[in-house]
Length: 103
Image (cartoon, rainbow, N blue to C red; front, side):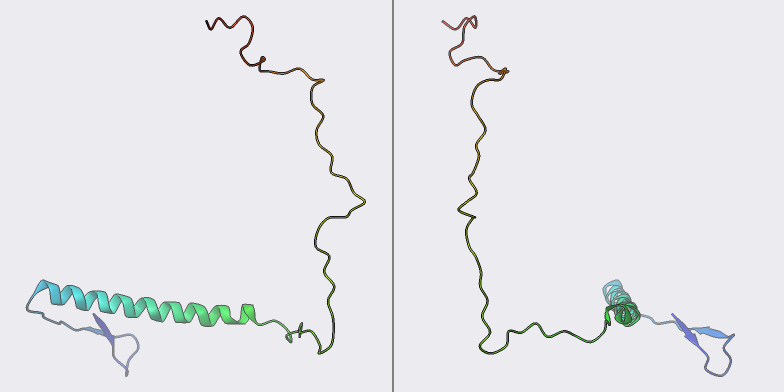
């Protein structure tokens, strides 16, 4: 652990902390790591906050009494076309096929 001396910026001091068990030392180390991650995350969010600030917000609410018309379904004048059957070379032979030798 390193602590900055507030009087002189160039100097630092090391603090030693002793624990009775390794579990306590590990838990303390994890707590310090989590705290540092939270500090870093907050700093990153603060830096990126200005990216999401856009101009004035627009009001897309529907005015009272205003109506919306929605057409559900297809256009009745347009017909669905299906692919034509036959007329093309097929890669597969007919079912029960010839020359297959099945029986």
